[in-house]
Length: 185
Image: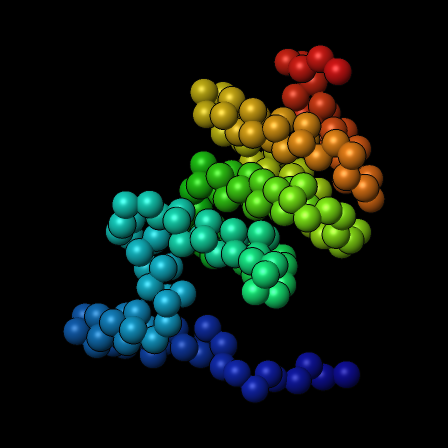
């Protein structure tokens, strides 16, 4: 069966148009994109290192999604929180910042379940998956940047004791598999 063309255009169709723009047109295009959405503004600020705390808007999104205001009946939004991490990665590809956001994601979700009780299997699967990704990211950092993250990952694991769905057991297994040479059971 022949592959159908999507309704939207592709980058390969757009790229020649952009390459034909002069400097002034390109600056106007970026300005228009900047004004178009808050997400574009955050991306450009992050890409160009503008602002005091480049992680702040991403952490704000993660916090709102993984530890929502239950009294306002806001839902947990795991995919939106993950997208914040992905957006940061696309903007700068900074491993230290990615590790911070991944650990923060798990901290927020873990704190939510510690505060409000068991959630569901999908929630814990997402936390366990991000915990594993965070460990891999932390282990890819230079050794002198790892300890603070290891301490935070250990605190998440310890504080999850008693939470169901095998969540704590998986955190413990992942933590001790990664850091077994320095930790004692």
